[in-house]
Amino acid sequence: MDKDIIEKLRGSRWIVTGATGLVGACLVDFLSELNRRYATDIGVTCAVRNVAKAEAMFDKTDCKVDCYEYDFASGGTFCPPQEADYLVHLASPTASKDFIEKPVETLNTSFLGTRQVLEYAKRAGKRLKGMLYVSSLEVYGTVWDDSEPLTEDCQGYLDPMQARSSYPMAKRAAECLCHAYNSEYGVRVMTARLAQTFGKAVDENDNRVFAQFARCAAADKDIVLFTEGELRRCYCHTEDAVEAMLYILLRGEGGMAYNVANEDAYISVRDMAEMVCREFGKNMKVRIEPKEGMGYSPVTYLRLDTRRIRALGWQPRHDLRQMFESVIYKI
Image 1 (cartoon, helix red, strand yellow):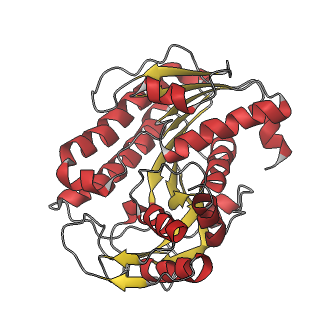
Image 2 (tube, one colour):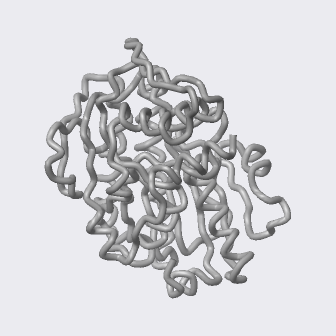
């Protein structure tokens, strides 16, 4: 990371929503590590639904980290006890099963929660130097042509009559809301569209594809796919994603969206499963056993273009194998 980025963070205060999630926890740990290494005196307020969980996750001896309890599905006023220089909004449902079984809650948490955070940013005015809304590559919907990478102005198809669409539709709506607050009220808010992100801090109960593959590799068990594994997407290491968020906050343009991915980690689910077996297994293999109703996103080819964020000076440092190493050797 550029030294001038670290210097600009010195003495700053942060609010991180969804701080007990995968990326949120990595961001809090990263800022705490900057304090330990460089005495940057960064303060962090973790806005979370479960304070006890947050306190158990983070170092209780770190007086620079505190918690604020807030339910992002409630629609209540978002009012952390301390002002901040930077706000990163990560709170969001992440389980595909919930998108199907709880589409209303998925929509409300993503959209209404973001609206309350934006209202806070609006009230904060110039005191808040920047807000980052963390979105997902799922906003691109269904794309079948990957001959050219997807720039931030591209959009694929989303079916609003499918419960599974509650997540990407809510993310699209929240992105639009962020741009509207930037345009109408001058809130300096940017959007980071993260590729599927994993590495350090993956929870043992995480049920996403990469976590399942990592557990299979650790036990040298066959990987069972319930689809043909045709879906293709980019991936990104958690540390790279966290650094990307800092670059966007400090160097990005208000109202803009930025793809965050390792373009070289573009791969189908089937090929990724084969790679894990080849690189980490001894006797494991891939088995295809189709099964309906698992809540997976439609087959789509999400090859992201990252020229916009690279122009800010960011570049990924971890390849797909290193992403899996970070998870497998922790299990």
